[in-house]
Every structure is written in structure tokens, then in C-alpha cells.
Image (cartoon, rainbow, N blue to C red; front, side, top):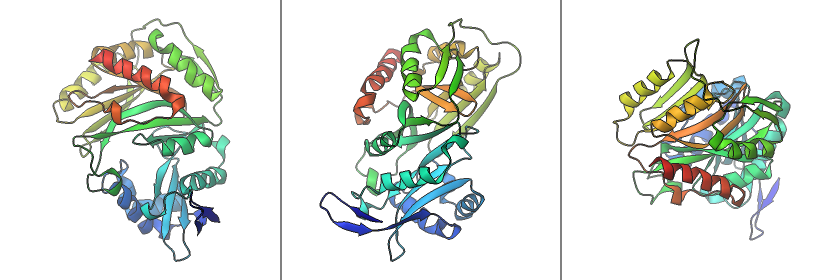
Length: 340
């Protein structure tokens, strides 16, 4: 493949799927961009990466020069937190070879190599320091649906992120496109956010039913949730698949245990298909959380996202989003202002 930059300089590259033996070069490229701070720490483990590539849990498209140098990668992970969804990510371009459009070439090649309808959706968590990865995603048919705020620390020694004040945490922009899941089912959303939610699902072109907001107190079985903690990033994420009568106690325990730590942040994803979802959302708002969007078509469930930063401010002035998400971004920022 011959690619060109804006100065019409040509570069000959081979784009292919990675093999096990590419693992060390993939890791070296990740370190070049992220230092030691990529949010998925497993990707720095050579044995993990080799096994994941060999087993088909992770697909990686690589761009290779004739001399064997990997100048770019893009990956897809089917073993993520949402069963049946495909996560795209790992997009990294060597700083000496930016400007040739390799991010889009790699992502397009990767998506064409996989079966879209084998997954409920394709989704990606894009960087918010600039709009480059967001633009690549939307050009490939994705839509911005929400934000994962203040989720991991930067490495000030890393080329891409030098010069940023500390403390500073990255925000990720959620982008999604529909796959095999064409009906989001009943959504028990708080009335305040239904306009935003309508826009997300209408934009994705999938069916959905907004249920009457009954603020139903949970009954029956205990909550089903996954709590992911990162001491390095001072980050806690709660994925609530079912809201039980113990949910308030679980939330209180997590905040009591980790809320005193400097720089600690929290994101909670609530299953909107749960009839107590709107109750859980109001509880989160009482505890100082605020709405940051939707993580849709995420396997069997639809998730609404809430964030709490405690003493660490959200760096809204450093977040870059595409023009088509300006209104959604303004709504999220307004919810933050109301929570303070």
C-alpha cells in the first residue's frame, strides 16, 4: 500500500493482522506513546499479548515498513467487560510517521477483517485531548454517545502528553456503531435525561422503548456488579448489571473505602434495562455523581454512565470533541456544574 501525507510524500507500507511474534514490537510502540500508563496494563505483558493474539481474543492490525519497523497499530478486543460486544482500541502511530492517515487505514482494515454482525456492537473509547481518533471513528460509521471522565493518569515523560499539569487525568469519549443488536429494549431512564437518550438511539438507528419513570425502589435478589479498581490510576469503575436492595450499601462502602485517596475518581455504569435504573441514577446524584452519557448496545445491556471526581476537577477546557457532539458535551458539562 502507498500512502501520502499532505505534502504528497509517499510511504510504502504493508498492512496485515499481527502474529504472535509481533508482540514485543507492539509493546514497544505502546510505550513510545503511553509510557507505562496505558489503561490496559495487560498489553505490556508479552506472554499475555502473544496468547491473546494466538487465541483470537485480540485482533491487531499493524502497518509495517519494508525494514520490519511497525509504524502503527490498531486493535480489537472481544474479551472485554461487555459480553458479545467488540471493543476497538490500541490505536498508536509512531511519531515519525504521523500525517499519512495510517490510523484510518488500520482501523478500516481491522473492521473489514472482522464480521460486524457477530457482535452486538462495535465500540471504542477515544482520546479526548484531540479529535483525531474521534474523527476516524465517525468516518467509519460510529457515533459519539458519552464520556468516561477522569479515568487514568498520564505519564509526563511520554512524548504525546508532555507539558501537561499534574494532577491530570484522561477523559475517554465513547463511540459506538450498531452490530447485530437492533433493539435496545425497555429503558428505565430518569426523565431529565430522556432527550439526550433519544438522540443517542435515534442516531444509532436502533429500536428502543423509553419506559415511564417510576423511580422504582429495588426488590428481590442482590445486586450483580463488577468493581474494577486501579491503584496506579486511582480509579474505580462499577458496572451494575442488576440493581438490588443492597446497591446503596455497596455504593457507600466503595466511597468510604476509596473516597479519601488523593486523585481518586469513580465511574458507575447502570443497566438501563433494569426497572430500578432511574432509582439508582437518583441515588448516584444524591452522592455527588453526575450524568456523562450512554454506553449503548453493550452486549445484552444498555448502560447509563455517571461520574464522581470528588476533589479532582474535571478538565473540561482540555477536552476536545467533534462539532456534532457539541450539544451533548454542553449538556454533560451542565450536569457537572449542577453537581458542584
